[in-house]
Length: 589
Image (cartoon, rainbow, N blue to C red):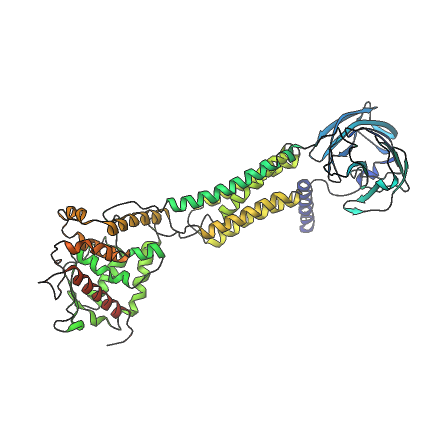
């Protein structure tokens, strides 16, 4: 097979698949099979809006056929109808009820349709009582738009339960959604309205009649609702309820997960340097200066402020007591080694020696801190928002899914909608489980692609309301995502623990602290760096002013012989401020 022929076959296959998916395409194929010579419609209307309809049809078949299809609309000019008691004279009828129409498959009692054929259809239409106060409008579809062939002649007679005037009668002729020519010639006699065509009707041309009858004409009629309409508020309620539950669950879970867990010690493997990054995703210079207090409490270093002694500030020194283990956080090890090995002599470092020199390393150690708490199983923040646009489209699929369920019982397209909606939701659930790989852009594209497929489905099947529900849900979920918590479950749990510890540091009473000091004499010093980073230093040191404390062994200040908590904290904070000054300084000494 040549390349050209192969391409043509591929094209034909593609066209065939498209035709299979889209169903029958518009055309006038039936006009080559048969024509309608005449349709004569007789309708008798009573006060309960029950219409006894008889249709006499005469048709010419150019090609023998087994069946023909006739559609009776159930929705005419915003008026709802029901059809039953369908029968035929000389034919067998198989009706299929849809939401907006009844499709009749008509077979000949014996043999096939061929040549000139005449038969009769009888059925009863029930209309719904109108809610307007000044009139009872009556509607009837004389020629339904489904005839896919030429109709050479049509006439109708409608017998009403009350007299009418010509100005009460209006005839609408249209092809698709476009009004067509003035097809019918109308006559009114007492309570009868008659009409007949002036021209032949082309395939797809439809004619309906509307009569504004006096109020009370259909006094015995009832308001009619279909399954679709009866469940309309139910579907709205389910959709709205699902969205409100999503909002409520989001607000509740966001606050519930952050409730403090009361504790009297920091979280496991805590470091005061992590607190600022945990709560604000920011890294500050104080996050590194506060490590000096933590290292001193661990027994790694001693601090010599020496502000008013020999050398003043220039004499401020940190000495090494022992080196940290290799299990220590990477950013702490890097910071520690820079201080003592890069700028110190391996045993001590004079703070003034860091001025103008350490700044070139500062961004590096900040990056190390972010990496420590920004990646891995113990990350505080999510690396990728894997559930953003994909989760959005899943939530958006729920209302459209409910919508298709309502359509299912009355329209075969509903099954298509349900199946495709379920398929799309499964795809989205799989995507939500997508591991933390790839960039957010690809996940976002996938999510909106799914939403786009739902849009296409809605437009193609003519159910724009379903797409609007999905689109509205999408907008709400986008808003929730923008406001949602970026922290991981581990990060949220860490915050709860720190909030509980902060509550202890802030609210601890003197009697409680006295009991704890019996087992932990250095309690104040261990809590000091955390109290400073959690913003409760004044509350933490207040009860200790009335408790006798010895200075810590790592502190070598000017008031070691006449120690006070107030002077100690003032001098320590001044020492940390000077340390931060030299770290940030760009001036070369």
